[in-house]
Image (cartoon, rainbow, N blue to C red):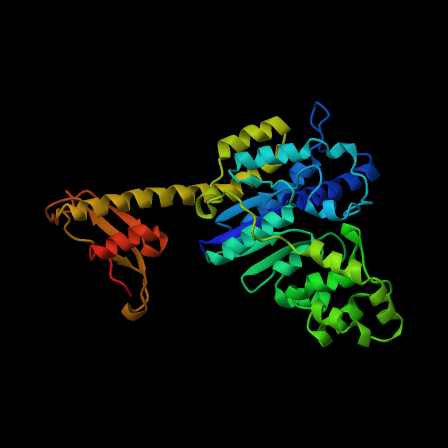
Amino acid sequence: MSTSDKTLLLIDGHSLALRSFFGIYTMAEKTGQHVFVRSDGQHTEAVHAFLSTLLNIIKDYRPSHIAVAFDLPGGTFRTAEYSDYKGGRTEIPQAFDGQIDLIKKMLTALRIPALTQENYEADDIVATLTRRGTEENYRVFILSGDRDIFQLVTDKVTLLYPVTTGPSKGIQLMDPAAVEKKTKVPPRLYPDLAALTGEQADNLPGVPGVGPGFAAKWLTEYGDLDGVIANQDSIKGKKGEALRENIENVRRNRRLNQLVDDLNIPLDLGEDTRFLPDLDALDSFFDEVQFRTIRKRAHDTLGPVVRAAGAATRTAAATAGVVRLMNSGRGRSLPCRGSNPPPRKRYLLGLSLSLSQRINRSPRKPPRSFAIGAPRLLPKATVKALMCLNVLKAP
């Protein structure tokens, strides 16, 4: 799948790590064969599966920018308001210990920022970077199994939702239509729906007896949760009575499930999240965690990314030299290389450059020359500079 050169992939690190871990560890417990264990006894199931999923996403969606958000130990503003928030979750096996640190070390080798924020969750970091990304005209993909992310989905934001069982097993693309099909409400109303029905994963109890169907019906009839609350006395029967008896829980749920999208994250989105992996550092990491078979796959997937980045760097440097040359008044000509279709349908493939001050038509003594990619492959600032020199013409 091809994407633009401004594609931002945001990953809920803890969500992916835990799903990755349990997917392998549970099966290993059943068979008694734990394959992903280092010689010193350190388990690496989550690390391997995390990387495997990441490689698949990179291959399929070719993100130009990537960032991963993690939760911090301890509480957040949500647990400060409701101490049972996310309580009662299944205890994580000891085999998971140390794997988050290894994943972060792997991300360092991949030059992918691993972000945390005191008093907030990974989802809030994702929400903040999603808002910033869309404001800066990125196409945003979010990899997360957390249903709270539904509220972030728009025409420019797609959720990559892991499905671990059933015929749809794999990564499910959730656009606004898919979210509405799954929840019966558009993405913007998902927090309202979850406030009424509760969220088992977060240990937030909803209105007894009110499931997604009735909640969606109320939201459709009254517009949103504020409308439902304003009209609570007109809702008859046991469900209306249950709503009125639990209205404070509903209000609390709505406060807690709203993701925060205005965190102060000291990050230059364009530079700090640009995906430029260090394959040598990744090989060293593979040696440390004793991964063998995934090494070739990683190089096959990431190698083109590294080569493309190198080509872009060389192109930018060459073009900057051309700008300096033209500014000096010593530039001569810039023949263009076009595609094969008829003239009116041709598009620019690149520019042929020569630093020679004379034209030499002898094939035995060609002038020193080189080529650079088409303007759409060049940095915007460079294209503007060339246009100012009348080297490139605006369409």
